[in-house]
Every structure is written in structure tokens, then in C-alpha cells.
Length: 586
Image 1 (tube, one colour):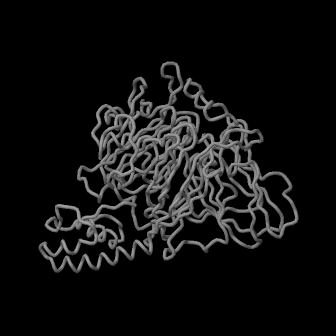
Image 2 (image 1 turned 135 degrees about the vertical axis):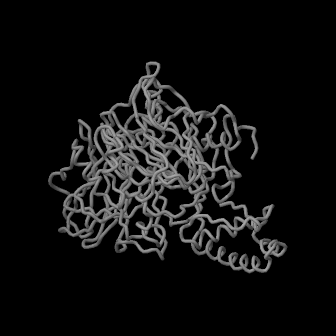
């Protein structure tokens, strides 16, 4: 990563590190120098200031500490990924897919809390391309989020180097293309953030670790799918379901041992149920939250979501079915894989384990059993439950209503009557350089109102450090899946019908888990609480890709007028320019 140092931010950063809260703390203004200084000159500069001796000692000690800390805990990991087309047959028919380094799905990214990721993405396909890091918070760094509101797409035969940190995170995540309908062709993969050695986890280390990317799939080329949406037609029902990009996979383990299965729904539109024949699933983590370790026969995983379970191979030695099947669909699609005991000589047999199909209440009740493990650590040594979110009074309530209108005779999707359209200039660049007529903060309302639906580039303003209540109201007959970049949030309530303030009495204000993607059941509501502690331009979108592509999204501009590195990193030196930003200079 690139860092610009000054005495103020350098000392400030160390206060931040030693405070355990990892929040910035101010030091007296008289200590703040007026110019930037490289780290090796910090203490020499301090000698010329008031309280020179004290500052000299402080900076010398802190310089040693920060160097030791960076070297010991915050390593740099370098990657080069090349994006190409290839021909594979995921459902038995040859079709064009998107490969990363020749792989489908793409390479699994295994990193550790606070690692610095330097990833050079080379685009060799015939369309501009971006990857987004689903669930990685990009602390103070929405410049690296990899969506069209923050980044110019990488042109064909060009490259861009992402530089970001898995700051204060652990857990199971994914990455995928955020441009056009590329996600329908692949380019996705697993992203696992492991805990630092000194941070305990609330279960014994598993004997192995499997990443399972499950999702619906189309045999149709992604460009034809895009053309269908552009013409105003919805996508047809998917052709099948894949597990790790294939219709058949085998996962092998030793009898008596326990393995972690990290399961992510990387599909376009369909909720899935996951289960393993003859085996129980112990839920231990959901998108970075350690959970109460409840036991399940099967788990619903909605579009964009990730869960991690422990599975003990405690059955007679043979092979067992692993199943992912669609939920809330008239026709049930199923994918299978094999759990193979290494001492097995018996292939899979018998009927597939039965899972739920259209039972909505079953899924709601299961979702309510997902609870935060209050005594467990996550990325930091302090327990998750040390943050008492339920005792904070929200500063604002936002109600978001999704809809599926026709605009000019074409299918669109909208939030609070606004159907989002991407401008040719990323919002983040327009905001940084004060480029006019790119977006408006007045188009989308925080409370829905009646009136016609319209197309606009909608940005909702918010203040850094606000604590907000967001009600996701779904008046449609299909399930929704909402994702917020840059954050996780507490999912405190699910309910049917129209939300009212009286529903707050049903909120879980004690041990609701945090996650980055929440489902909203048909004709129902879901409430989330969000601590806006991460400045930037953040995409809030439907994880159901057709809906996102046709307008069910907007951006949350979390802002503080005090411009300093304590709030947000500077614009990257390698930023790409496009649209109205071409020709401007940092």
C-alpha cells in the first residue's frame, strides 16, 4: 500500500492502534505540523516543535512499534490475475465462460486479518471489466471497491492494480465481476480471511477447509442475457445449479475428523438450500460473525450470502451426497457433489436428502435462530458482544421499498421510485473533483412516497459516525436479497406485511449477528442497524443481478467535511480516469 505520512497522522495512528477500539483519536492541535514529512524525518522535525523532547521520545518508540507491527502482522501479498474467455461445459453443453488465470471458478484468495493485498488485474476479454470484493469493508478506501460508482472499468488489453487491506476482518467471502452480466459467465471465486495466530476462535481448529461456491447457472451466453435485459425482458428461469462451477465434485476427508465447509451463493437470482446426506451442520460463522453453534440438517443460503459450518465425518465409511437445491421456485433445480470418506469403498447411494422447497415460514424461523456469539472474538481479541448496539438510539430511520415498474414499456427495478442508472463517470471521481451533473443527492428519499417511477443516478447523503435504522420493505411476491458495500450490519428483525414503528418491540437488540447481505421475504420486511463508521461512496444494491442491473441500487455517500487520513485515504496514484473525469488531475 502507499502511505503518506505526517507527524500528526503518524502519532494519531499509533494512538488508534493502542486504543484497542481501532478508532482515531485526536492529539492537541499545537502538535500538528503544517507540512508532510517522511517517516525517517519525523523525530528530527519533532525536535523543532514545542515539547520537543517528549515528542522525540514518543516518535522514536512509536517508529519502532509501527515497523515491528507492519512486519509482524501486516504482510503484503502480491497477485497477478489475467482475465480471459474459455470454453467449458458446466451443464454438459459447451459455452463461453470467464476464466481467471485459466481457472473456473477463479483462484481462491486465502489471506489473514490485516493483510495488504496487491492484485494486478489484466483484462484480456473484449469488454471493460471490474472485480468487487463482496464483504470486504475497504476501510476508509472505497477507491478499491470495484464497482462502477467508485472505479472506472479496466479496458480490454489493459490492467489495474487493486491495493486494499482486510482490515479487522475474518470470515468467508467472495469476489465476482461487477460489470454488465459478466457474473453470468464466471469470474467469481472464494475469498477467505483467516484469524491472526494470537486471536482465539470459538471452536477447535478443523482438520480441513473446503470452499463451496453454489449458484444457479444459465447455458446462454452472458452477452445474450444482457441483450435480453437491455430490450426490457426479464431473464428466464435458470438452467441448472453448479457447485464450484461443475455439476459433479468430490470432497474427501478422514473418518472421525471435522472439516469446515464455507458455502457461498454466487448465483444470479435464486436462493439455495444446502445439506449433506447423513450429516449435521454446525453453524460457526456468517460473513465474519462468529455465531452461536446451533446444529442444522440444512441451511438456506440466499443470493450473495456466505456461511461456514463444521461437519464431523462420524458416519459409517462410504460416500454421501452433498446437495444444493433451489428455494421458492415452482420447478426445483438440484446440484450434487460427493463427500468421500478416504476409507470408503462404497459409492453414493439412496435417495437425495430431502430439503425444503417453498416453505417461507421455515426459512424465516431458521433465520431467527442465527445469533451472535457474544463471548467469542472475531478479528480482534475483544468479544463481539462488547459492542452494545442495542443501546444506541438511531439518528435516522430509512425505509427502502423495492418495486418492479415498467418505464417506457421496458422492465426496470427501483428503490423508493428511483431506478438507478450508471453514469459514464464514477461517482467517487465526480465527488472528489467536484464534477457537476454526474449525480444528485436529492433524487432518492429516505421515506418512500407515492408518484411515478423515474430513472436517475441516485445518491443518498449520510454523516460519518451516524447510527441508522434501515427498513427493507418488500411488497412484491418474490424474495429479495440486499447488500451494502463497505459495512456489515445487525439484522435485528424480520416480519410480514407492512413495517410500522410498533414492530421495533420485536427487534433483537442483544445478539443479532452482523452480516453484509440480508434477505427480505415476500410481502415482508427486514430491519438492519448500521454504524456508519467508514467514510466513502458505498453501493447498496440488490444481490439479485437482474434487479441490480436494471436499477435496484443506489449509493450511500458517508461523509465528513474534515478531510484527513483519519477519515479516508487519498485518491490512489494509479486511479483510472473515464467519462467526465478524463483530463482532470489529482
